[in-house]
Image (tube, rainbow over all chains, first blue to last red; front, side, top):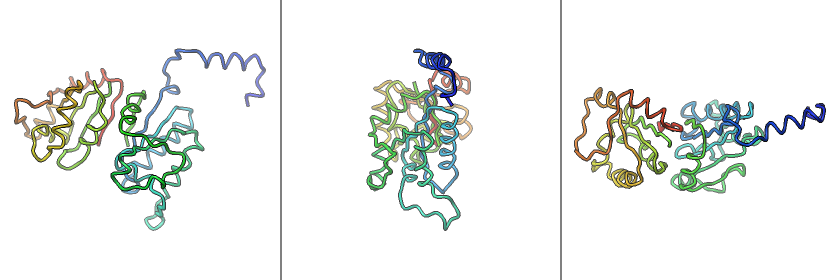
Length: 145
Length: 107
């Protein structure tokens, strides 16, 4: 689409966007979704994913942080057909397609639940407990699920 | 400053312990709703794991609060003069929320 714009317009547009000290607007606000519930038991895990995809679709900067019981969402070999639900881990795998590239997982929460690190998809990043605190401090808005 | 709210009893749920693990220096914690059943957790033998965490976080300037209307509604009272939780009115709670950069709910 940008190719269709006259070059002068394009230059103007990008210089506006690159200005330093851009005010925090709904689209520049950095949003952290803290996911702390296992999938299937209630709707929260599903809703966090829908929020992430919706926010990603409008160009918001979204990161997801999987903590505590939320790390069960990442378990491989989920086969929820028998309970009439969609595969949650497969849907998480689609996050990179929606430009949600920051998917953080708390290493301690995994090890406490004996979840094998090798099971995690390559779109995830493992972080330690100190980094969890930094990530929380570093975002403008937090939504917890 | 991040404001952490906890709304589950620590005798039932890991919420408070999980929150304490992720609090940074200078943050505030408010017990609300059933979270106020933890009002005496700093001196409870059953919750001894929390005692140490709370004592340590207090040295880092973490502020501990609990919502007075929720405490009174449930017939609770503090059992120790050294209770680290400051009691807040609804108005105080609103002020604290406005003061905070963001709120993280543990539920």
